[in-house]
Amino acid sequence: MGMTADAALWFLPAVIPIAIYVSWTDMSMMKITNKAVMALVASYAILGLFAFPFDMYLWQWLNLVVMLVIGIALNAAGVMGAGDAKFMAAAAPMIVLADIRDLMLLFAACLIAALLVHRAAKYSPIRAAVPHWKSWEDRKFPKGFPLSVTLLMYLLLVAIYR
Image (tube, rainbow, N blue to C red; front, top):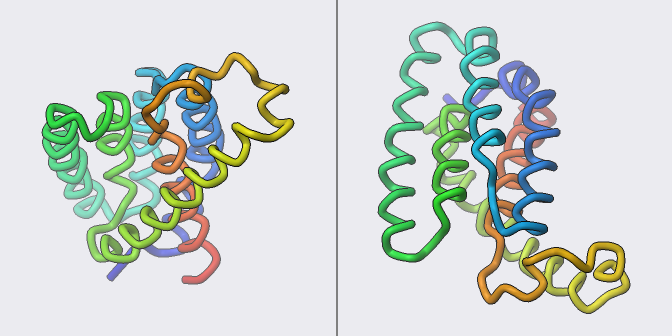
């Protein structure tokens, strides 16, 4: 069984501002701050108690550990930054394993869409509004943008369609 709409609704009020903040800071500074990661972990620590049955709440913490190990390996391989790895780990307890296939498809769509939107914005008048963003010139793409949008969209889709 995947995540329930009720569970998603518990997490959304906390995830919305964190996702916006992560997207903004990763595009502007090419950095996901530790305070955003800790806010996401704290959100799960508190809201997870209300969102999930207690035994499931405890098991979901294992997702954080598994994703942190995977993220460290991906960071060591140069695939993503340390902030991206920490954000994935912090978000992982909010993801139900039964939904992983759908989540991966959603992430692929968000990654492509974020790349297209970011690159289109780079050559549009939007750039004049935020000319200081490091992501305009960096050859690396800020993955915090699609990662945070993926988490947000996952929770929104579950809340709407389940």
